[in-house]
Image (cartoon, rainbow, N blue to C red; front, side, top):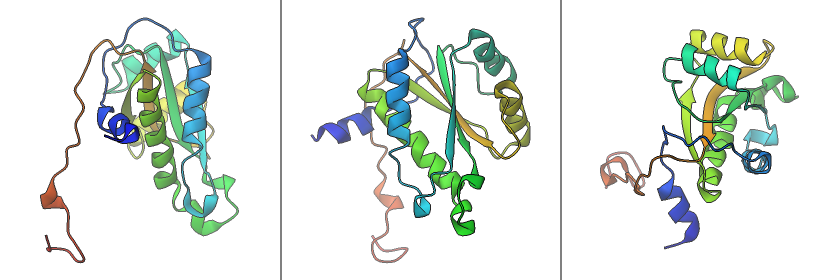
Length: 174
């Protein structure tokens, strides 16, 4: 099988991590992968907050409903539509930042890391909490929080392919 497809199929949500810190070089590579993502009209509306401070990570764990993970690092994927001068491109910040987040999730597998995506936007309470913990200005919206660390659990690769959800040429055609 193609090595890229192997990495994609191996990507799973990891919810248990070892205490080993993630090297800054690996976090930097994840951010480079994120910013290699495509974006509508190349506006690149993304910004990222990397959190390794144990106090801030503890706040995420205590204050976010699904945030109780023991990862030694987190990357907050944020959208800043004001980075684009094109008003139409600004409308696609969620899609653009989602693609950047997915690149992080996939790249992490290749680096021997585990990740889990915690959705933040559009739940106002989650957005407010992450904004408070990270000091985000109002013009920047946290889309999601990605915990990153060395996995303390192993999961088998999978595709979840379901041909009933695939339509050829028009809806309803198999």
